[in-house]
Length: 405
Image 1: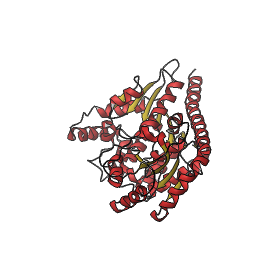
Image 2: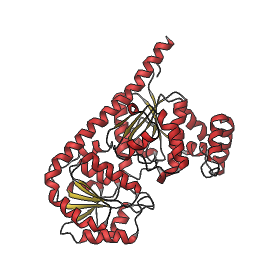
Image 3: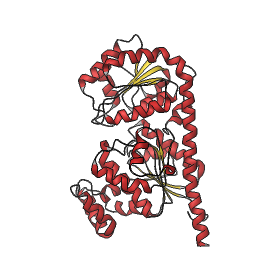
Image 4: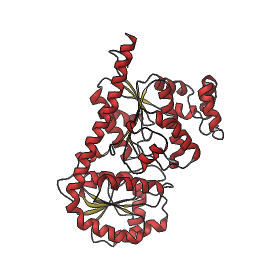
């Protein structure tokens, strides 16, 4: 930090498109907390949706991720990732030249390379906002984020990862890369303490550099919690490679839900092409089903196949039955159950689904208070984690000023 100058912040969000309500909620909370601490901060955000960023923070500067894509040479030199990683470190001018060629070949502005590198190297703070993308399922994106973090560390910025759900990470190359970068991060706040903590420990991350703070989206969802439970069953399902579900599996869930004597309402989170939640929900319940995230407060329980439908319901005091078929979602849902306790059930076999729905419906009024208390506890932990992370920057700035004086 520089005396009497605005703090310069680079924000790496969970996604670059405004197509996931969970991603948007986590980013909104992070930006609000940044502005509360440093109202005049110069904030740059990696995004392909400038209009969405303007709605969240009109003062922020959007930066298209083209520069990061070019710097990582995605789609051009992917067969030699280790060689080009070495080139980025030991011959950055040559790598910059090759990256600009890669962008020209993709009909993108080669100057994006310079803008990306300048944004990272001039930042006082680089923050990765809430995400579940450092894992095998999103390997390319994870590698890109790790590169941004390492650039920031090497440039002397404070680096923090907030509201992270890490893993599974069994890909050898990705794991080596993460193990080389994450122990050098100044501070990491995690969504849950089951899978993510163990993964960081296996990579040699010091305990004092990490904490379990819960998901940042809990703050927004809790603020909208209804005064009483509703009478519908909220339904969210995700059909995607990382969910590991097929048509037969989804139709079986649909039969179980339609057999219930309760209204069904869709609770979509993702509008990403190829994994639109509403299309999947209509596939298993029928094309006439309606709904939106705004109808979540009407629910008594939610049956969820994606993470943020579950976490937002729980934060509103609504019991959840999660349905998991992939390691990716098993890690997420088991961690969520550990954070919220009673009221969050993890179903791994459809043979158990009917009983889990029945139990959740009957117990919903009795566990509502404990779910809301768990949400409050995690909000407090998340706020404390942000304070600690921001203090790291201000402490480092004070020390730097003292050394220079």
